[in-house]
Image (cartoon, rainbow, N blue to C red; front, top):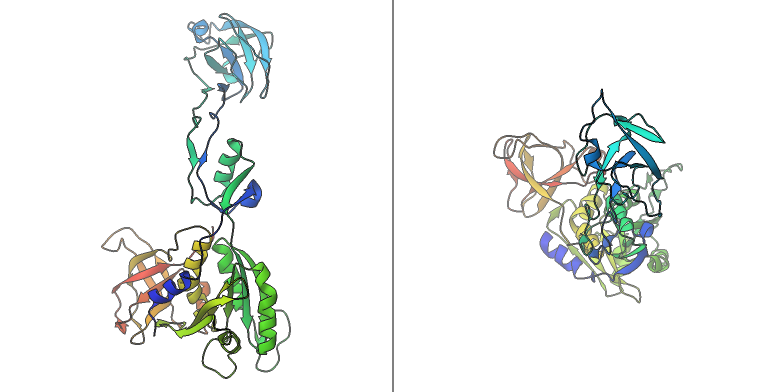
Length: 410
């Protein structure tokens, strides 16, 4: 059997580095930046007020006090966005709004709360320091500064920065298009009645959701039966909307393992066994005239999910323009003993808990009581996978183990 690492490497060998493309800001949301972004301007671009108040010369208010307010003539109103140049001489002031440009000659802003709110003259009841409530040009970003580095995922904060430095579009690695397809004559779309021997199809929903969490645009085709011609026709029809195809089911050794039967004929898809539990039967290769990568996963739901996180996720990261890393790991103490078949690396569903003391930082991990590859219910409450190495068959309660952290919803 192949090692886990070799199978990951083989799949990554199918995945070419993505080509960057220029996208409008909103379409670029969630994509990965393909080039550094440099600000063409200072931010802010001009000295401006950080609050509603009065632009003044601070020296005029040195003797202001609650019982002896200083009164100043108001010579101008300056709203935010005002493009008219304004100046203030000593002994005068201008009423100013938040974000409005500071008038020439003023060196401080008095908050309106320190005044009587006058519009012709205003009384100020305390001194003010030079620079009070002023946002200086370039306080946030200097012209020529790099505001975003290549490789960052564009979330809301990054989108705000891009717009603030005047970018209408940006060079990104677009979100990969993933098509998810399940196979099996026993499958029925959820919500429809079941016949004898049938089950509601769940894999495509699960894998589509996992791919979406991984930052991809996902098309869930649903499922097809076990007719080879239908499977091939369906696959060919989906290739135009896919950067990668992920299938579940039909890759084992059975008489009706249709994915294996159909794709083996092409000579571009390899089916193999990997030293992993769950998920031993795996497949990978290319389909169609453009050589679209296809990754075929087992049909048992837990096998499909674990296989996605271990084998598919690194490939999707590379397609996004990110380092093809696996999920992060930590160390934790088992709260119950676990077992594993010899010669295979097990990934056991578990719940990771965190404290703050001891050699493992107080982390403990509780394995799920049901670990069958068909037992999907325990997966919903799991936030981690306990890793049992290939050369280990039993681990006692309290043993410190490697733990894979499963993705969390944002």
